[in-house]
Length: 162
Image (cartoon, rainbow, N blue to C red; front, side, top):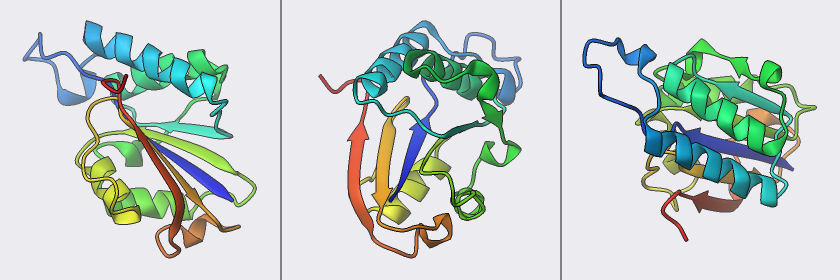
């Protein structure tokens, strides 16, 4: 069984229009939502074997807040440039290259790529708002089969869910 967590970064700030896109930080709601979603993951004991983040500041801040909440070492977060901007095909290639020993993987990135990938893997997911977490389980031994085999279980959680 392989479990893939797709996490869209939390809400970012547009306060400084001169900042390059990659350098935009989280706004206050984004920081709150990232911490909240991390706590929800911790309650479900949803700790990945590896956590890969986009190099964008808002995605990395989301990754750090979630990692802190679930007890995942901040120094163990891996930054992968393929997650920014993160086209769905490129994300799927990244997933196919994952080590088969890994059982649970978390990717933290951006739209539209994450929603497109989630929808490609499961028609149940049509939109991922900021800080949404899609948990997809596949009954397979190889990450190379993700997208080629049907998803066994899908859970979509969002900050606005009670």
